[in-house]
Structures are given as structure tokens and as C-alpha cells.
Image: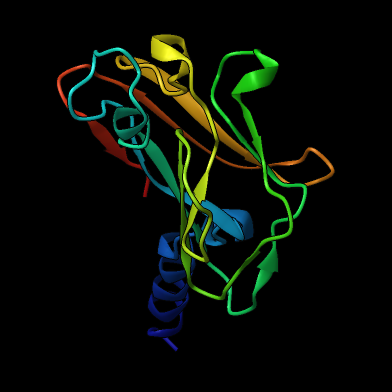
Length: 158
């Protein structure tokens, strides 16, 4: 009987030391930012298409099912309406990534183009600090990624 209090104390201590992780902290967003490349090679320049396409955001489907991104939006922190990319008919495969480039080009299953042109004001991602947002068609925030450095050209969002 003299070991019972010791056993109960050990059991109580074990319960106290078990880490508690909220369910939402363990879950990844269905679509998340992988990387934002915000300081394209050669910039600042006159906004040539090759330089515009040198800045991009890469998104990943973290689920085991394909997700239709029709109506989903990608944007930066500015409130300018022309800084919103809206996905048309596009399905992102399970575990796959898609890169959204700022300039013009031909869309593929792995690369989409914002279609921007018009010089230096066509860039989306600020070179020193910005935040990217992914929202589903109902406007719910799915993921965001921020950076605050002009010393590097990109940010890994994971």
C-alpha cells in the first residue's frame, strides 16, 4: 500500500507533461503558399515580360484529392483590384503545385499567367515587404505568406 501514493503521483505527473496540440494547428490548409519570388532577375527594369514572369507565387494542394480552383483568388496586400488573380477553370491535382507568374504566357497544368504588362507598374509583389493571400470562391482566407526583406529575392512560405 505504501507504493500507491507514489504510483498516483507518477500518473498525475505523466498527465501534466502530455503536450496538448489544438486540432487546427496540426491541419495544413488545403492549398498553401510554397514560395513567393518577389525580386525578379534584372529588376528594376522597364517591366519587360521576361522580368514580369521572373516574379511568381507557387501554391500547393496539400490534400490527397484534386481541388477545383475555379473562382479562387491570389492577391498581394494592396487593395488595388488589378492585383487580384482569379483562377478560371483549373484543377490542382492531389499533392501538386501550380506557379502563377505575373506576366503573359500560355497557361499549362503547372503554370498560370496573371497576364500583366505595362512597364514597372505591372509588378505585383513589392521588392521589400508584402503579403500574399489565397482565398476560396466564398472569400474565406485559406493561407497567407508575408516577407520583409530586400536582401533576398524570395521567401519560402512553409
